[in-house]
Structure formats: structure tokens, C-alpha cells
Amino acid sequence: MMLPYKARKNLYLVLVFALLTLFLIYTAFPLVTIILTAGKTNKEVFQGPFSRPAAFFENFGRNARNAWTTGRLGRYFANSIIMTVPSVIITLALSIPAGYSLARISFPGRDVIFLLFLTGLILPFQAIMISLYFLMLRLGLLDTYWSVIFASAGVPFGVFMMRSFFLGLPQELVDAARVDGCSEFQVFWKIMLPLVSPAALSLTVFQFMWSWNSFLIPLLFITSVDKRPVPLGLMFFQTQFTVQYNLIAAAVILSSLPVIVVYLLFQSKFEQGITLGALKG
Image: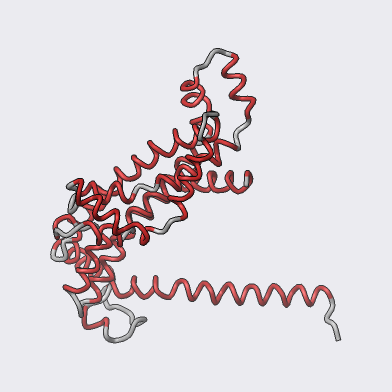
């Protein structure tokens, strides 16, 4: 016997709500566990993952201070900032003009150059990391910040993304600007660049998250303890404090704050850029 349409619709909504609830619990489980662990003493940690800490904020503050000083998390933070900010700047400085050129300027070999960028986007880092290691060795950049900065710059993805946005802009704006006497640089700087600012901010968020969370690249190029970024430092931090899970949890929470702050600062423009790209795709 087939159920009425309204009953089938209600059953469908119940099933969807149940699946979303299960997914929410599955997603929130590690986050809640880390937050609770960061607010416990080392003794309370072994009472259970969901046991209630006696003094959450007091314990969290103490664990965070110990992780920042004893675990040298403050130094790892500084290293990550030194590596991440230039990587974002280099990515934007190269991707935006290259994306505009490949989208709006006709010149011989344009499609070939774009295919080379696509190859860099498709090719996994593991396939080139040995060659890249010897390249950095010959350039004398091993165990320096610049090796991680150059290797982390997501120029192929940035060029692909910015080219797509420049292609979606109306050609009439460019034609009108050229009729008014604008040079190619003025068309790019005064007309096109402001229109793709949401895409540029979206690329900023993507590149910041990628560079900040990068683990394999600094593991390959960095050997000095004083130059380790946050992801690499947390691995050795965990080895140093094998049984002090509360300090490890506090360090994980602190290390995630910059990415959260960057996303919140650019949230509206980031969502606008993603939505604009979806509508054009």
C-alpha cells in the first residue's frame, strides 16, 4: 500500500533530518573531544573523553600557556607566519596578472602556457618533490624559509581560478574602456581588478589555509628546530609530551585560530567569490 504524498514527504524529511543529525554528531565528535581535553588536567584526561573538567577555563589557560612556552608553540607560530604571508603575496602577485593575460590578451602560445599551468595543477607534489628537493639544494635554499615559501605558492591553482573569473566579465566593459583611451594596464588595474576582488580574497583564504596547514613541504625542506612551522612543530610536540594530551589539545586549538580568524575576516567576500564562480560555471 502506497503512502499518501504528504506522508511520504514527511517521512523523507525525517530521514534527511536523521542523516544530517548523524553527520553532525560524527563531525562534532573530534572537535568536542579536543575542546574538553584542552580544559582538563592530565589526571582528568584519563577519566574519559567526555568527562566534565572541574575547572575548564583555568585548566585551558594553564595548558595553553605551557604549550606556548614549554612546547615552543610561539616560535612555531612565528615561523608559520613568516612562511605563509609571503606565500600568499607571491600567489596573488603572480596569479592575478597571469590569469588576466591568459583570459583577455591574445598572443602566440597562450593556450600552451595555460596547459602548462594546468599540468602544474594536476601533477601531485609527491611526483616532483625529489626533483624539487635537489633544485632547492643546488640553489642553496634548503633549511630556509624561502624553500617553503616558493614550494607552497599555489600559482597554478591561482591562475586557473583567476582566469575563470576574468573570462566571466563582460567584454563590453573592456571595449568601452579602450574607446575612452585606457591602456591595457589601466583596463586591468582600474576596470577588471576591482571586479574580481571577491575572487582574489577567496584565493587569499584558500592559499592561507593551504600554506598554514602544509606539512609535507616543510618536512621535506626544514631540518632546524627553530624554523619549524606549526604543523611540523606539533608532530614533534606530540612526541615530546606523549602522555600530556591536554597540552597537545590546547596546542591544536591555538594552531587553528589563525585560519578561523582569516576566514571570519573575509567571510562575506569569500562566499561572494565562491557564489559568483558557481553562477559563471
